[in-house]
Length: 359
Length: 189
Image (cartoon, rainbow over all chains, first blue to last red; front, top):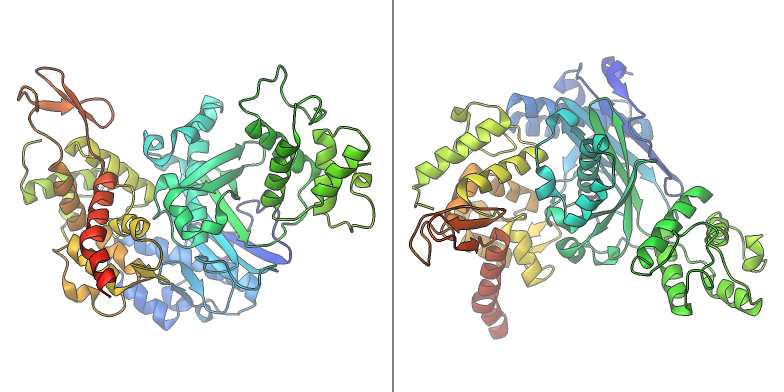
């Protein structure tokens, strides 16, 4: 490694479940100790020379390039940073020709970059509007750089309601995490937040894991209509005075093995969402029975099953499951449904009966 | 609000930018770009909020191109990251101060950031929106002052109005352009 290795940190954000066969590296860089000539290609050098920005921005631009090239080098086995050329595409997104997909962010003298490679897609061609099948986005913000009242501009009232559920001490940090999550999704999709801040809507946040789910609305859906109703999961983390966000998304991919607990959390959240106007005396629990206890009808079950398949981007034999429990004249608990989803996401074959996997 | 000259709007906006970015106002000129001055995403939000507060206007949260694309539909004004000829016509019509040569040849969407984040573009946008902020009350002629949110209130009779948003005005303009200048052309073709 070169002289700047000591300032690189490769474990900035827990990247969570990666799409199958995807490799990813996230690098944080706090200071630059190599010269521009040692890391920039001739075209990049020209871009750098022509940049009219203030020195702070010019330095952060270099820092970001260096972090990205370091991440790419770890994935693509190139020896010299200057051999890795990063050129913006027509929308301004940084691209490495023929190399990993990347995303870069910098703020307050710190840069972070995410690079990913590989992946398997079930779709032969990329979806309309998306620059690649494999998309990455990263962002960071300083907690010291927070602007008073930015929530009123940056967030929809529904999003501010999510912040209201947090302890007051956590609000500032999570407002920034939510902001970073929006930025990361905008970068991953290749057009930033140009469709408007409220077109990237925070749908759910999990303070225990740092995960934030973002849903597209309005103008963003015009660019990416196939993402309607999909929740894009962003990982966020805090390190001292900075918060970071990262998303790795593969169109049509099966994400690797969510844990049983993660599936249960999702199902409980989804149930709460689907039944928010229903009048239950008790909160929905893992033991709650869908039909006799929660009052589900067959159409409600279909809506739930469809939502689960869309969320995990994986078809599952729900029709058989519902038919079998009907024949057996029994009910289905959320916990059993969790087990069913967990089993299918872990790739079991269809040799046994659908309900047999519940046991 | 009282009519402000170009230079008055610029000077007031330059002060807002300088304060937000903690730089000297002399560094802000009409042809500088906010990001080149070191503005990050949250700085742009602060500049937006402060501009709205000081000029009593309601800035759009996306560019005129984005709004127009929503009105025109995909691939009409911009395709694969590049402006179409129709997109160039629309932007030149909307930003007449822009040098037409800047839109010659291939124009990438990323290059438009230079226009949308240019200080002169913001000054023009502020002046355009300020026309919709009344200085005098339509009921009694009293002076209007800021009220809650994007509302103005008459100091004399208490009459309140809601400011028109930049997004709403942009959308109206794009629809009018679509109806009067784009659709007739496409019908003839």
